[in-house]
Amino acid sequence: MIKTALVVNAFLPYTHIWIYRQIIDSNINTELVLCQKRENEQEFPFENIIQSGSNSFWVRYVKNRLWFLYKNFEPALPRYSYNIFRKALIEQNIQLVHAHFGIAGAQFLPLCEELNIPLLVTFHGFDISSAPQRWPAYRTALKKLFEKCRLLITISNEMADRLEGIGCDRGKIRISYLGVPLENFPFVDRSNRTGPVRFLHAGRLTAKKGVPYLVRAFDRAFPEPEVALLDIVGDGEEKELVEETIKIENPKNPVIMHGRVSAQQLLKLRESADVFVLNCRKDSAGTMEGLPISTLEAAATGLPAISTYHAGIPESIKDGKTGYLVPENDQVAFAEAMRKMLNRERCQKMGKEARVFMEEKFDLVKCNQVLRNIYDEAHHLHRARGN
Image 1 (cartoon, rainbow, N blue to C red):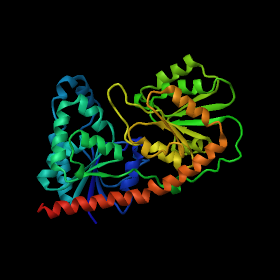
Image 2: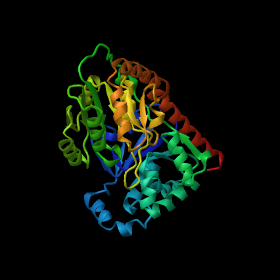
Image 3: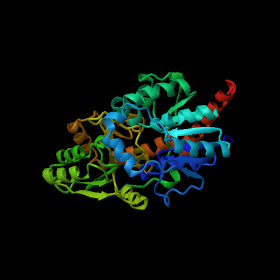
Image 4: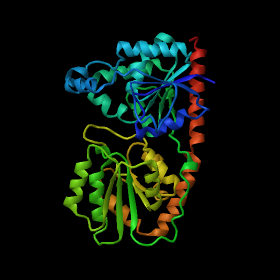
């Protein structure tokens, strides 16, 4: 099997569990993780990790303060990080490097070229939406990635279109959906439920998630009391704005903010929910989603979903069959979709179809096999061209 090294900035934010699900699969054969810093070690144990430690608070602080200068420099590894990672790749005889996010890929391209190791890069969202717009030097670095890499990966067809739109040869792009371990997300029988319909949002409280607008749509949808409930799970920079929106709107039905919760707590909230909601949109900086894993995990348990025609989301929700999709920024349409979910028979039918759809398209075993095939193809192309 191909000995592979994974590259991420931090290993591993709790929101990036999908990376962990890939690398612990023995079929993928990730031998080594290279990162700037280590996070959540207990939740994501991995033995062979090389950490350069360069991404300190003060480094980030200086970059933010001097962004007007920094944006003119292409992403690059500090020399000491370059040497640490170079030594590890040589000593462990790594045959392929897989970087998550375009910025990490741009940083590692010179090192992989020096060591003649094929580089795969998976793009996830902001790295081909807002980042190229606000960082001119990164746009230049992307052109080099498009030229030098044999293959590049996106997590949806929509992202493949976007990648092609900013200059990548479509023939180099491969799609690798993020899978869900279905055995960890069993189907929940929600028949014979009564009382208020329970809606669940789970995701970071950040602008592209549109949570304040979700609260307003919920209030519009249910002007009468005791018919619905909205659970909001997650933390982020818009937490205070969401709290303020709840106070101002004062919905007739309860809106409960849970903050960040454990995986077990989230599992229980999914079980008690009737509908999953994710009100995504492009934010003011141009940042977009890729394909949120939260919608896939919810659907696996049999939750129908309401979301928007945004990024790769329409590839995970079949409008009218496993949930509803509405245009971005259309609170009236979102409210109308929520209102439709008062029909519990409709919810249950859509939820069953959602589970079947996950089994067909987003089962982790199948998705990881696709990724393994891409690894094999990249390695074969590298060798076939005399490298």
